[in-house]
Amino acid sequence: MITGRFFLSLTLVLLISFGLADASIQRCRNVPGAVGFPSTAEWAALNASVAGRLVAVVPTVKFCSSRPGGCTPQQFASSVFLNEIPGAMNQINWEQDYDSVPPSLCLHNSTACGQGNVPLFAVLAESTNDIQKGVDFARANNLRLAVKASGHDYLGRSTAKNSLLISTHKLQSIQFTDDFRVGGKSKGTAVTVGSGVGLATLYRAAKTNGKIVVGGTASTLAAAGGYVQGGGHSYLSPTFGLAADNTLELTVVLADGSVVTANEVENTDLFWAMRGGGAGSWGVIVSATFQTFPTFNASISTGFIFSNSSQVMGQLTSAHARHIFDWDSFRVGQYFVLTTPDFLSMPESSGKFVMMVRTFFPNVTTEVAAGALQPFFDEATAVGALVTVETVESNINDALIAADDPVGVNMVVGSRLVPATAYKNSPTTFGDVYTQFLDSRTAAVFGFLVAGGKVAENANIPNAIHPGWRTAKVHLSLVNTWDDSASIAQVQGNETLFRDTQLPLLEKLSGTNAGAYSNEADVLEKNFQDTFFGPNYARLSAIKSKYDPLDLFIVGAGVGSERWDKAGICRI
Image 1 (cartoon, one colour):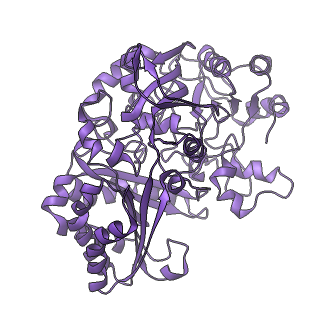
Image 2 (tube, rainbow, N blue to C red):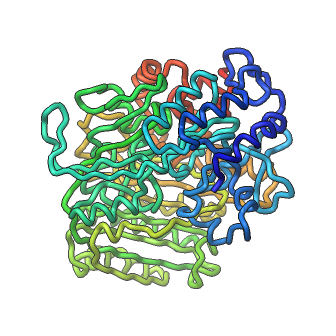
């Protein structure tokens, strides 16, 4: 890993190579070359104040080129490996600056490496004090500030060009309690985790304590990072609700450098905003406390359906839409994905469209789970598709643990929440729309049956979750990818494909006002205020002004970002 010793020698290089951008006026952040940009001595003082934990940051490819032997393809594709690199993002496109002239890129096929959208320096925080020092330095020097827990970020919000990064990856504390109290009132069993703790680590610790928490399946995703701030969906959401519904308390460093507790008694407006009001806009989370539940066994069914025909896949999605309410009484969580030929790396998928359906049945035997799904799989066989299904029973913690996550590609997503009424009233429309997506070579359409059940029942919980979650059945997400060899025009075409081409088709399912899950969505949404936050935006904006009046915490498509340019450098 890059050490603190590098940062002094690189400072002068960075000052020269980034040019003389004029940020002397107050409306813009200070960048290298600006009169107010910190001197080498000032960076050194910050480094001393955080006990040498300030490091120079470089893109992933450049980091690997500096290692003896470089990085293997397996390491480039490993979230566990990338999680240890300060400048790495899970999707490498977020490290690139495609918009500058000339573009600043650092890809596998690059002849030279630019800094791109990777921060200049990072505080690798190991304490609350480290975070405070970084926040105070950024505010005092009018710097662009970025915050990253893991780099599991589909909108590129945890990296920023010419910025100072605060990394919370090393905040790895985990503490369980049987009686967590807020304002003297017992909230029952809970766990308090540092904002760097990944889900795989948390699930293992929870199993040891006989507990489970609401979380996703990504190995390194930090539960107490952007995940909970965006709402946090899970296979367990139909049973227990969203992660934000199960958050009891947050400890946060604010833009003024102070440390506050936010819960239903203290700083209640901030507590409301940070549970669903979007990642990266409020402060730096030090730790979060989540409700825990007794661990249990679940039956997990994994089905693969193969066909040479997009029309057949369309029939399957209509059948799936008709059967989706069959499983409500079980409170299942289900991920289902349709892919174009060869998107998946498996021999059986060669030249074929694939539908993968993975379903979690809490506290249900494998026989009951298989029986509940059989009518759908029978329909798939009847239309001529090849079906393979495996159903196993597992402890829920073990089932949710992923050893690693496949990453390292160029990828953007766009999404919408699809109301339950759409499935009830128009199941055949799903087949028509999916067929058009597949025929237009959309790489993959991901469906997440993570709403309904407890998510709907939690509508009265006072948090900033988009109301569309409470009436939704499924979160649908479209994935667009490209190779490193793509031209800038091709990259930009992929970046705008969802907004300009795919969204009108998706809205035939969701309607035009359904909303979207802000953590897995398009950062270029034209009206992100309504799409991501709905009727909550005015209140969120007021809370933002109260706790961060200078907009120190600005991210793409986040609260207040409409006041800033795309890079978050200058007010508009």
